[in-house]
Image 1 (cartoon, rainbow, N blue to C red):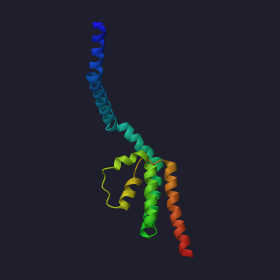
Image 2 (image 1 turned 45 degrees about the vertical axis):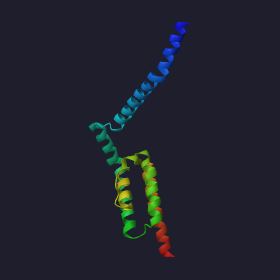
Image 3 (image 1 turned 90 degrees about the horizontal axis):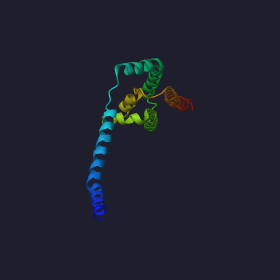
Image 4 (image 1 turned 60 degrees about the horizontal axis):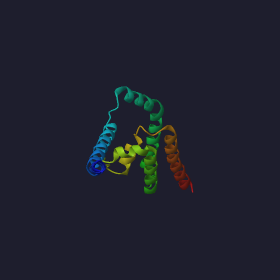
Length: 147
């Protein structure tokens, strides 16, 4: 009987004091591991490989999109609604990497768009969507001018 009471007392002590301490310790370790993974630096070879891919495959799309966007802005064909929709398209293209810009202070919407355009994580199909969107704006403005 005394042995059973001793076991019961040990379980009560375990669940009330030791288990919460263990839970806190485990949560702290998990949080620390996540922080390490987030701040894990990219090694030079990975960075070089990413840059080569970007230079070969994606930079021509970036240059084309940037040139069209510059042209539309200089000609005054990018209206506020177009800029907001374009920014949302870019945010969708950047995806979860948008968190990298959380603390960044943008001067204006144009600055935000140029920064998003430079993101390495936009893939080729998304670049094609971006360029098609800009070309649609350009063509619709041409049609409005002709009428």
